[in-house]
Amino acid sequence: MASALAVQYGLATSTAFAFPSATLAAADTTNRIVSQWSLGKGHVQDGTTEISFVADPFPNSPPTGDPSDTTVNNPNATVLQVTYPQGSFSHESGGTQFYNLWNTTDGSNWGSMLLSYEVAFNSNFDWVKGGKLPGLRGGLDGTGCSGGDSVPDGKECFSSRVMWRKSAEGEVYAYIPTPNGLCTDKNVICNSDFGTSLERGAFGFLSGRWLRLNMLVQLNNPPNVANGQIQLYYNDRLAISRQGLQIRASDTLFINGLFFSTFFGGSDSSWATPTTQHTYFRNIQLWGSSAMSNLTGQSVKSAGFVSSPTPLLLLLFLSTACLWILPFF
Image (cartoon, rainbow, N blue to C red):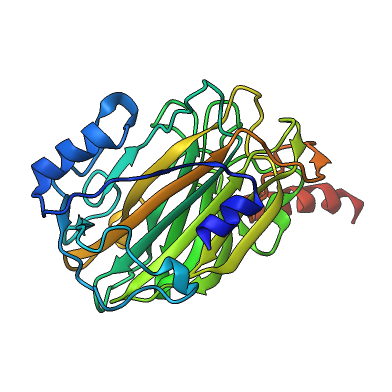
């Protein structure tokens, strides 16, 4: 499926992330990822003690979907285990986070990118309130557009990750501008202090087996036209397709690579995992092209962030209205 999508969208350049044939403990895993996965600033941002290359825990449970994509690149390769310690939430206390910068050979920039990987959750995984899974990001600064930042202006960075929610509901979780009334869409949940949820519950995760995720991001072009798109395929089925997006507001912002970000949360203990749990990753690949979206789209009008009125604001409104009306009686 991923290779067919790459052909469909003209993504002629590709790369695969190398996995070792032998298992590695956390320190050696970190060193290998730093030396071979082209990380931004040359380091794993968080979770160096929570990652290790281990034997495949589910060798006989391949993803459902396109049979041609169910074979492992190297049947003898290890898989990347990520640990979420008991009580952990956010990438500072569990899971891991790092940013791969995938450079072109000719100095051009990525306008479209496809990420494909397989993920497995340990058997009987407790989903709690939710958590993050890897996606794509743009901008050279790896600290913005995540971690509870406000809605981005599209000039410095963007990110598009996958997220699981309570009861294993899946969604795309994006830090992108929200113009032209995007937040009024019934399948979009906006929050001024966090990312934007796209199509929450469009699919459901399973534990104890391998699952395949393919994420396509095409930047809007020009920056002031909302014609970008994000697609997510779950086990080779199109689960989420969002068009008419403004992903960037500057012609100097491009897609830069894999945003490997996974943890429980959420930014408070209500998101914490009650027990130590694990996810596993394999077959991580990228396809890219300098071409951007050629879809039609609306010119950008405003940020368009909409949130439900708080009880305090509603009370203030009613009080003001009463004071204005009373003199007429």
